[in-house]
Figure 1: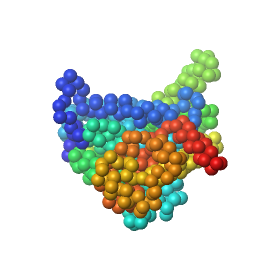
Figure 2: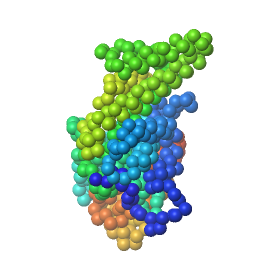
Figure 3: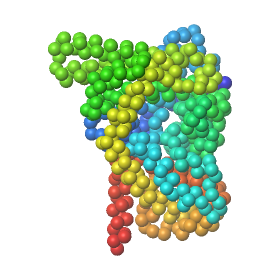
Figure 4: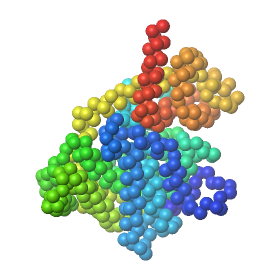
Length: 489
């Protein structure tokens, strides 16, 4: 087992001797400066199309998770200064930067428009499954179909950093296998998921097209599919800590609820746990102090909310550290069947905060209305882009001459007659050249229509999942206007 493996899919022939960063520092920097991270600034965390700058986007959420990953891993290491709680191999001092990189990258595959956007992608495929999954060479396999019917942002994140980003060896960001394994919250294919048992099987972590890469990563760090890297447990806990606390804070800043509402909810819990009681008492004590200082009502609310966030996050990080250390043997083996936060003394409080956020934020009429609007726009854009993809002759998508000739023969089986419309050509050209190049390499040696159709559909999800919300709306409106004008002629 080599949990902290610095191996990469593509190793440089000559290392720059002037660069004294360790491999894992390079991983963090590659993620941080990548375009997908910047695009998270225009992707919803909870509140779509938000104009209040104090409310989180996916970008601010990802930075906060990254920071918590670094902090929690450091606290675990400092609790056992002579031990190696993240495995016997490798330098344990590298763990915090690996954890920070995984935390920063964990949401890169999420589509625009929040949680509803992910469901909108799945629903689009469910509505068209008969049309999309059948060709003259046969249907897509069950597992290929499930890749789309149960489409996963987690699998898209793995695909993004291992394949879709431009690199010399066509290995995406070419991160170390330790960082990739830490990112893999789920470690099975879509055909092997299960709601019961190990949490690494709850959802799928890679598409069929990326199966060999995922297997290589897990093999190198010494984990079997269905098990989980120790730092992935840390990353999952930090994501839970962040969104359970921060989503509530954002709901307060939006005026949907008040801090008093949150404290009352914690107090009303049946058999309220010690963590909830502790947070409630500490915040109320601070409110008394602030009122004695005769601060303005606005200042009192703002400072009290900061105390609530700080106390709550601090308590959950401390309890997650204790849970990690008390389950260290199972975690190192990747076999712990649980979540660090759910198993901790803060588990009940975290669940109560998540439920409170879901009812008062995720399910609020304004949020639901905006998410549904975003989902409708996403469906409309996918219709237009699919027309562009499905109307484009395969031989025009690859550079290899032998591939061009063979793919031209498959066009008929896919019902393609070449670039049949100006609109189709225009829509197809809206797709990123990076993603088109990945598609071209994948289908150059494909021999049947069903295999090509699978990559057609991946090309579509690669594009829409990577788009920002403003770009989705602008592209949809542009294509709709052009289509309307064409129909009017």
